Amino acid sequence: MKRLMFCLLMAMAASFAQAQGDKVNKIIVGFPPGQATDQVARLLAQELSRELQENFIVENRPGQGGSVALAALKRSEPDGRTMVLAALASLVVNPHLYKNVGYATLSDFEPVALVADLPMLLVVNPKLPAQSYKELVSYVKDHPGKLNYASSGNGTLSHLGMEELKRHTGMKIAHIPYSGSARSMADVVGGGVQAAIDTVAVTQTQIRAGKLRLLATTYSERLPAFPDIPTLAELGVKDFRLSAWLGLMMPKGVPPDRVARLNNAAMKVIQSEAVRSKYAALGAVPRTMPTPEFRRFMAAEYERWGNGVQQAALTVD
Image (tube, rainbow, N blue to C red; front, top):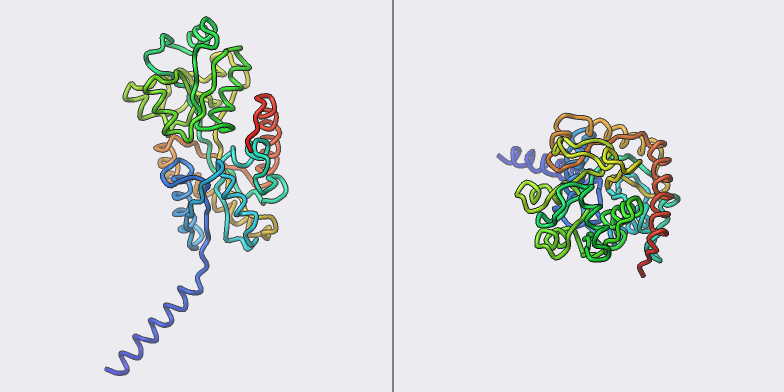
């Protein structure tokens, strides 16, 4: 009996020591739990844990449109265990928008992998007498300065995307910023504002319930969730492509072999049928890119949205 107890205690001690020795990988998300970025992060944490036989957890650090999380990443050790699933705005918009975000996107981070696109949709309140995109443009032009559009906040993609659309069309429609998509969509549904651009995840339930009218998608191709709805490019808005892409980032100095290992694993799990089907339910589109190409893409996006912020004359303290 004593021998049995001794063996059990030794086994428990060994198990405890092994557990203590296991290193945990952390994916930080700059938004509250439940939002699309958080849901994608939790799916990736689950699949990367399985693929790499390592522990991945998600930690939420919301604030400043995702920049609080990236500022924390810059201060973290480059040990290859901490990363941020960052949205487009926090990486390539906020540094132009805010006077101080606490990081320099193109020099402080190691891009690991581009993992998803979150396509955007152009929606209006159903009571607005515009049944199509072209009718919306005509109606706004016939009522200059009389209509409003909602965004999830100053400098967000829902804001800059509509400003870019205004430059393409000459529409004069005022911007009403909100603190998040939930509040902005509630006012579009309620009729307090007339239009908005936001993600599939935020809008699709209200669209299917008839509480929002979907006029166009902003992606480069039609979306499986709404195959009958044309893209803005199809409707004549040349080269208009808008999606809130998501990328995994690590602090500068992480060993290249660790970055390559994580990139390979991320590309593999994203292409799996299980992840693709779960992405579809979130309104996300799988997107993979080797690390060097992701770095070039991010630099181009940094310039694009820097110009967008400048043209919209935006600054936030």
